[in-house]
Length: 77
Image (cartoon, rainbow, N blue to C red; front, side):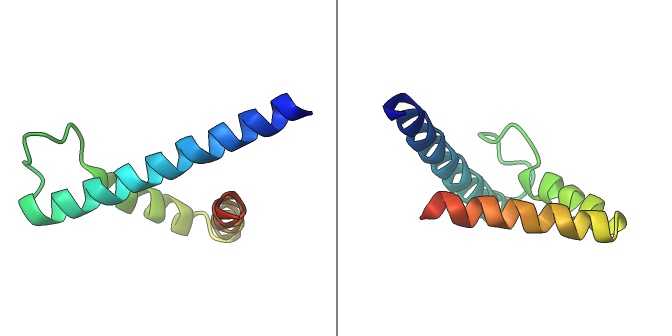
């Protein structure tokens, strides 16, 4: 059981780092535009596409968004 807790803690920490990097990428892209040479992708565009895809799926998208928010809040505890 200790190994599972260690893995769960590690996954939570990696998730937090990933979310922090996404937030940093969004800020950088807002400040420098889509053509920021040190960013390799369109972070804001990808986020908009994800939100659009969730919105187009109606109730299924709403349930998926609820699950994502639940997992995010659970990982922060």
